[in-house]
Image (cartoon, rainbow, N blue to C red; front, top):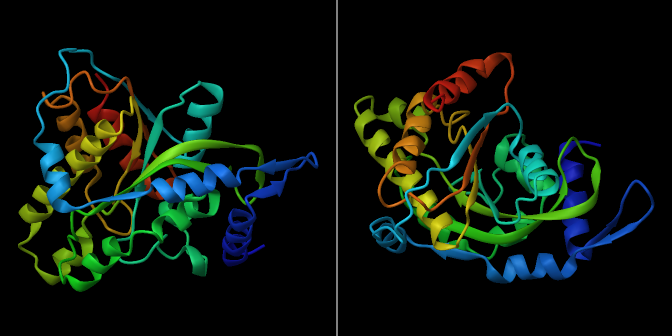
Length: 277
């Protein structure tokens, strides 16, 4: 089955709210899917900025356990929820700024498209046209600080096109990294602006996770693929915020899942080196 056909199969399953697993059992999740769609919200740039400036929520100085792993986001999510009992997981979708699910419908393959094929996130995104309109109307390739939060999204796949034995739930933060590659082609002198934007938006991602009470975060090489952001910068952006006074004591566990192939070993290395201590 092509990725385009898999996308359509996913949409059909989400509409029905059920599927038959490999053991012949009917897996039903319609109520969970409807709730995820209903409770999906948009954080505007103004709301995001206000969240980022909030003082520390408590007095705890505990530092989160930080892991860097070589796996896809969806495989890491299943491991954390199913095998390790992480029931409050929120993960970051490396999102398109202008198209829901990126090229999911047409069979494109990148992290966001994989998440859309594996979960119920796509219908959630369709409820927030203001996110996409703001980025389409603006000319900046750094995009806006609009961010979508979708709670307890059902997951129906993790590898290839196979349906899993039972759904699990994980929340999703949909946020675009700056399109560094295209922005630099347009203006070779915008490197500082790219860094400022990426660092600020990384903080916004953490602020939204904190605002929704998540103790467990699943992050990764955000914008390090087609958007050509420097993995050392991305790793450091998250690393700096995780030790900032506004977030100290907020999270128990942070996992950076870096899907690794021969072409991006340096990306994995950048995160391993940043979080080696």
